[in-house]
Length: 336
Image 1 (cartoon, one colour):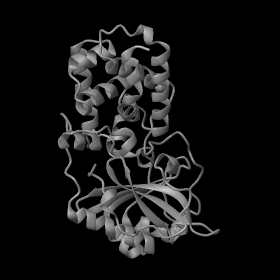
Image 2: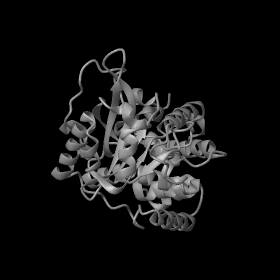
Image 3: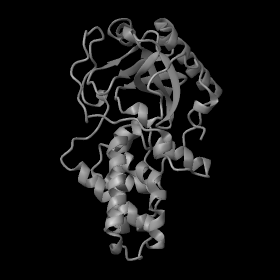
Image 4: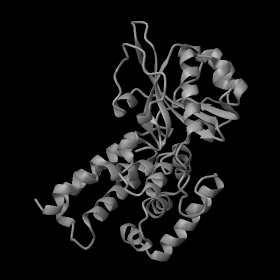
């Protein structure tokens, strides 16, 4: 075995982060990284040493992602593909699997960073808003934006990885920044690190947990921004505004009463695993909720209903007793 080959698996987390941003799905990203490592083992004799093993692995990972993206529609959130739904609908419609971005555990996609500013940029780059904005870009522009503005590669390094010129990289970056700027994220240059959650935000999250677990809809809705959104991937339906969200939660969503929330680290944002009451006793996993905060309010609640998610977050298959009702410091986003 070549000495460099022994360290291939050590790049798994950073490669998963790159593939996750490229593909919008943690499951696809994990598959892509597995394929990347397999190709590296099988074709190690093609590594000529002119670039670092890390760059060589990224080149393979990029090619795997491009192969996976061919023929697939872009991943999004429901509010990106249609109008809001009526809150009193009795059914959510048919699920549309493979259509939506999915949440990812921070520990799977965020590499350790000694610099707090770099860590903050990394967290921002996996927020749902930025992730969905990335999916609007052609694969090459997407890769350039991730490599230049998130991973801080030089233009020369990116050109070498993509097999193109530095002017082509610069042009692609300008176009990618312009597109993401129109979505309201990626302010047109290297990403600005967001501030960590302050005590007021932590209090907001504590009140959210208490209100949700009591299923006190009036208290819960009071925490929402007036135009807050509520999505439930893999379903297409989504809601906008306090009144419609309250009507849904009192109507078709009333099965969430009695739920317990467990804080998880997902997408660099406040997130919770939701366990609904199990008729057999205790609570069973139902969703992973990822919240968006803005101006001291909850601006978005995204419930991801995917039976594969609990395993990715290391969650138990059921709770036999009440989960902690208050957000623990260990579960607070922005602290790694």
